[in-house]
Length: 145
Image 1 (spheres, rainbow, N blue to C red):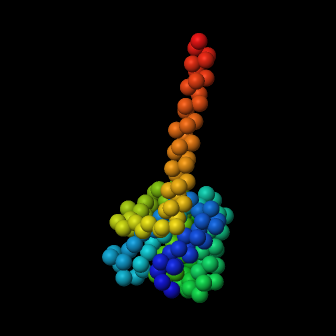
Image 2: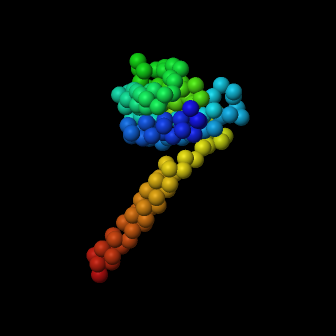
Image 3: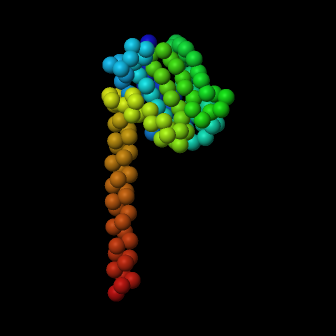
């Protein structure tokens, strides 16, 4: 399976179960073992297990292979090895502690579809936040009069 198709499939599977802070890194220059490292956060043991199951099921349904899965029994950090991509699904405290982005994060991969959606969403939220403080300002003026 093409690496771009695989990484898009994995990111979609993670987004389906509401993974947080998904990052994709190109690791071809660092190791010959795999081409991508994908890191995502889940809010609970149950969610990290569900995220891993979603990745496993979508990759298998698309004809890809799952080499192995680790950490499903506890669910704090679940690793899914698809051969060309390694997926780390972690709870935020563990993710911050181990800081895998520092190890693998030299070359982040920008996904066009996800980046466009996130960019549009972020700019809309920023505009909303900028508009929100403007509303209380007139109220303050009225109370001070």
